[in-house]
Image (cartoon, rainbow, N blue to C red; front, side, top):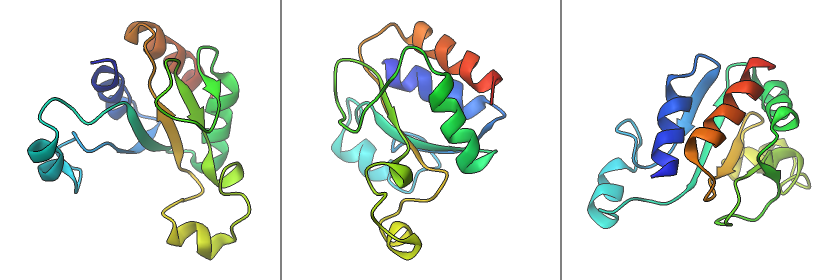
Length: 128
């Protein structure tokens, strides 16, 4: 699927510090995902960049194909930085309790061609 291809690209990218996607073998949810979702877990995942929060925000600014929106599972690819948008009302302790780290970026992959999405991510990461 598109998401698997995009996750594989990002996992191998040197500017990506971590990815949280249940199908990855290093995910703490991998066994459960395999058991309960044998056809795949869907199109939503989170990641952090080696440059932290500033790099994540810069990535979002340089993307051309993605929409900066809080909704998920749309037909178009979406990206958001929850700590400064959807969870901005929370203090630092509340953010961490909710699992929202300063570097966390949430992506929802849409129906666009995966190669186009990867090209957009690649050009944006080159500018971070």
